[in-house]
Image 1 (spheres, rainbow, N blue to C red):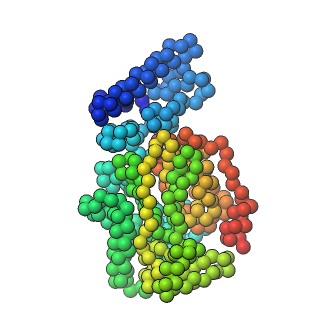
Image 2 (image 1 turned 90 degrees about the vertical axis):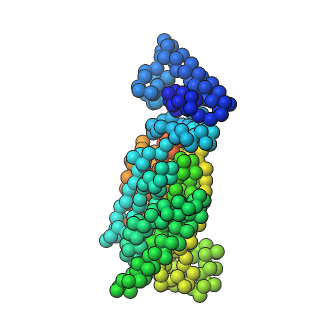
Length: 372
């Protein structure tokens, strides 16, 4: 964090104790920089960056809990004052996104990134199946349904749960007027993340698209796939009169058709236990340790595990490069499905940069089932 930002925060924010702590921190950093600048072997200034050890790398230090490295972002003053610690702004211009068709005839994946309200950011990936109708509908209307609920409800987990169910009902009404009966088998995964005040992260998901947080260089899974392999999911399907079968590759399917137990759409399977109610998770970000959020569809998840995804992203200089590299690497490893990823940088971006990536191609070649 720059000295100017600390000065501004100290002069405008918080209680007397908070201001005194910030002012002490400002004086400490100012003294540190002055000593460095006036030393005989002093550093070379590059804008707000310094190179005290002549290594050619920019200075990286934890300033009051914020990692100052390659992503320069202003501090959200209202949120920082409210939570009593500096919280960096997440700019949508820094978010990386990529979607690749893979070996399929059509890309049925959809993704969206937006500033939904003044204090809430919206990130979503949808992986359609049996056509793109359901994914297109969610891409067009999910944010709108969430916005309407935000105006009446404060709990983001409740908001996302209701939004998923409302979108599913709206899609049913929309498809009811279609002359094509095959659209009743169209469906989509949905993984949506809301970031409020730069610190409150809430994720909701149905299907097998995923959300993952990189914390201290390690992958922290925020979602769990909804597949018939899960005991709780399989029991619900059977109680509702559905059944689970395994295909020639050993993959379980609901009623021999669907590889997931929760989705938006798939109305021909709704009476057999396939539901649109998401599982949700809320987490408070620690920008000194949290490097990024990654949302991925199964074109990437099928071929790479969460830590491998985390390591690849940590090799990259910025989130946009990371999104492109990850989708390309998944293809190199044999991914055939559509692959989509969103990479959202946080305060610790670059702090846990990986020097190499450990990936066993032979393991993935055998275990993926695509080449069996």
